[in-house]
Amino acid sequence: MSMRIVLKARVYWKQREFQRIMSAIASRLQAVRDRIARAARDFGRSPREIGLLAVSKTWPVDCVIEANGAGQRSFGENYVQEGVAKVLATAGLGLEWHFIGPLQSNKTRLVAEHFSWVHSIERMKVAERLSAQRPDDLPPLSVCIEVNVSGAATKSGCTPGEALALCQAVSALPRLKLRGLMAIPAAADDFAAQRAPFRQLRELRERIRAAGLPLDTLSMGMSHDLEAAVAEGATIVRIGTAIFGERRHP
Ligand SMILES: *Cc1c(COP(=O)(O)O)cnc(C)c1O
Image 1 (cartoon, rainbow, N blue to C red):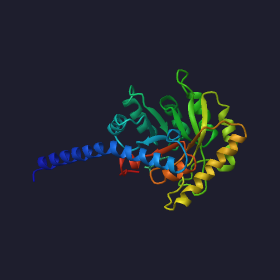
Image 2: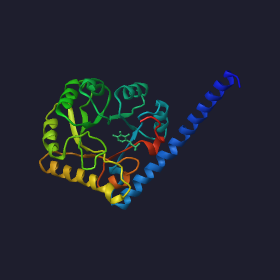
Image 3: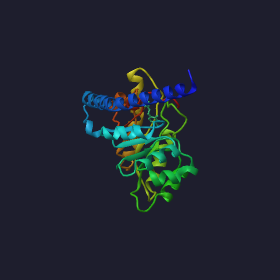
Image 4: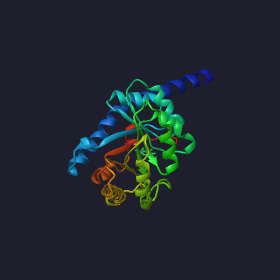
């Protein structure tokens, strides 16, 4: 085969693959909504209490637009550069962007300027910079404190013992609005094992509420464990794979 034909075949294959991914998004999104609704019903909750954050990291902006066409409005990104590019490319669509990845203090400005939420606050330095850098013409940045619950998948997040003091300090920052807690437990297959760290996060939120901070958010649950998170009171589930498919690059 000539080089030309090989290249043409590759372009054709890529386009076919792209169309396949796109047409799957709307039906996958509906399947995720159905899972949330069923779990809510099973555990005596209203599906309206549970927000769906579509995690679009590694996927091209066309996938975001496709999901938005199917009614999805809130999107989550892990990497600053990639996320900001998608925020800018979709300006005007009225999307709500959540930053959910590890955040270094030298990258806070772009996040403060382009996102509505940050779920991954684990230290005061990052929170202070986000508050100082939040533009005056935008509403306060909604934030969650990431907690390293037992069996966490990553080393990120404050310890449960540090969470109350961090919440108190963050809630005093003028341009942040403290919303709640976030966790990323390690994947487990057993439903009871999945629930345990989510229960720990829920109970931690109850203790922090009892100390007088009105936290309205529990950001927990991903593609493989959203039912367990809903069972334990999740108010935002963060779903990537079940909507967009398997990521090829982590
Ligand atoms: C990637 C990611 C998700 C989505 O995970 P899936 O298993 O693909 O649903 C959720 N939360 C965070 C913090 C992530 O990094």
